[in-house]
Amino acid sequence: MKRNIILLLAFIAGFSIMCFELLGGRMLAPFFGSSVYVWGSIITVFLLALSIGYLTGGRLSLYRPSLKKFALIFLLAGMALLPTLFFSLNLFEWVFERIEDPRYGSLLASILVFLVPSIVMGMIAPYSVRILTVSADSSGHTAGFLYFVSTLGSAIGTIMTSFYLVLWLEIDQILWLIFTLLILCGILALVVDLIDRARAKQRQAI
Amino acid sequence: MDSYSFQSVTTSLFNTKSMLLNFALIVFFGTISFSVTAKQIHKERSIYRNVVITEEDNLRCMRFETRRKQITNQACIDLQDEQRLVFEYSHGVLAGYALNPAPKRVLIIGLGGGILSNVIQQISPEAQIVNVEIDPVVVKLARKYFGYRENDKTTTVIKDGRVYVKRALIKKQQFDWIILDAFNGDYIPEHLMTLEFLNEVKGLLSERGILSANTFSGSRLYDYESATYQRVFGKLHIFNAPTKGNRVIFASKNSDFELFPPLPSLFRDTFAHYRVNVEQTMQRIDDEIDWDTNSEILTDQFSPANLLKQAD
Image (cartoon, rainbow over all chains, first blue to last red):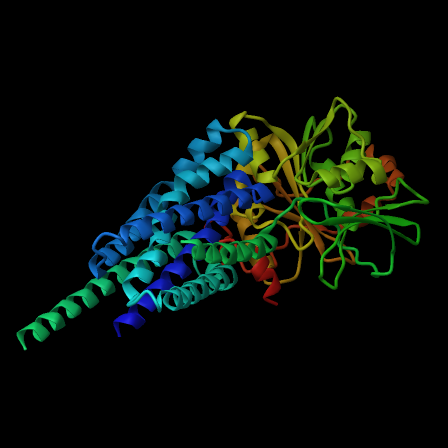
């Protein structure tokens, strides 16, 4: 069960990242247009964030990996979305007033608003590999299966957001949805952690 | 850690797809559809798409290459009668002269062939005209194939229309006539249809300034779009093209034009020069509200315009 839940969490993380990225384009358009360079800025910043996230998440997994820490990453990712929800308009305006060139304007705006939350979301994938891996022999299989699940999540996040969510909800509502998903994931991981510990204690007692 | 790049590659693949879906580029538009067999005389790749120049039955047109079956021309001229305004909607746009016979500053968002700009330049040689166009290739081809004229009064800015409008607001610029004519081969880019955008445009209108917006009738989007214009500008007058699905929305800053005034008689000869029939054009303008006024409004938060358009 623990394994399936971690896979579910990795799926939701993949979903959230792409959902967030697609909204990024919508959020920037009123200020920087929807020219090719606006998408260029967004994709650059998200990939940069993911690479930093992978590196940090992998590093973090070296030090006493635990489900509790895994849960904290999710909670942190949710919290990191709050500035986006409350201050993105102000930040975009601030950048727009200072930088005339929409290329650098959209790049700086993307860094300010999208970088931190997506770094944290990027930490989830390598950390879940560590938690699921039981032996060096099977680590490739574990990692491969996790990419499969989280990238599938990304694919579904992309299609859901661009085909349906923007038709059903406002941008902020979709952001709150991602926030809620991430927080729920964190809580779920904490619960699994508690159950795990209780079971371990039982086993010890026996 | 290397294997993580797999996800990056996949992620960027998805992004490329979403890019294609979302690219909004701003260009002039008409609705006349022609057969696919028109002779292609030039094709040029821009960062947004291929722009094609075709010639058929003495009509030279600019098209965006899309996979859609229905091909829409972005601009057309009649090679045998170059003064003739080919598109019905452009006749409607010119009716704006009835509301403001002497515009001093004109803003056109979406250049296409630069045909409207040329005509307004000829009718109002004193006017300053700013054409905003996102795609440099469209500007280049407008100059080369459609005789788009620039001078010290008529200038071209290569920029996303929304960005231009926001900057112009900061610079406290004002325009007597704003013409919205930005299309991407599918429809109007979504960020150029929202309540916030229209309020920004309204902020650029001078005290007696007017807006002419080229839009389509038909599709589920009609109610949303109309309700959004109405929310921002109040009273609207609408020119409905006789045979094509275009309509031109007229709005003013103060929503104070209960009646659409007749065209001053001095324009009759001028309009005839462009083969525009004044009576027929003016007859097609009314203030009838034929949309669902309770419709949801398009905003920066909610603007699935192109999804709504396809939902028919």
